[in-house]
Image (cartoon, rainbow, N blue to C red; front, side, top):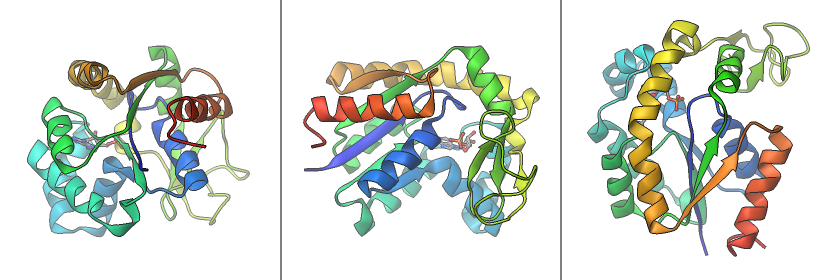
Length: 216
Ligand code: AMP
């Protein structure tokens, strides 16, 4: 049995946070295409150079690049029992390509009002060293600007700045509707109210997985 999951939802809805928690609990990798790209940009690789301008403008990286990256990642041995895809697929083309790579068991669609999303995104801070996620109001570090886990410096993603957030949400709305429909038609889409606390959202996901016979 596999636990091949797709997490859908606008930027800032908390997908990464829920994915991280479930990934640790069930020992399956959390694969975020955004994290992969940011890491490649940081390292200054060929791939990083190719995607830098798109990521910094909050625009989608071309399908053929993203699909290749995901295909390679899913072929790694740690994905055999399952995985959580976060931030992929973002276009219908990517969803169709994913079905050719592997079988998806369930797609979670996380939803929350726009005001909640904007507040979560604009307060988000990330550790430069270990990638831990904080929020200036909802999950502040003990010392402002410093990571509790590793002592690294916290930063705000270029694309979490207010002038880019609106653009990302617009792109998301335009692109996501067909993907949500695609998984709904396959009968593997479940909607999760992500305006609640992190613990409640995670518990809800686990209950859904159990009800579907994917978790015991
Ligand atoms: P995220 O961390 O998921 O918000 O992704 C950050 C940025 O990486 C996005 O704004 C895009 O520029 C790029 N990106 C991540 N995943 C994808 C994807 N599936 N398709 C296209 N671009 C992506």
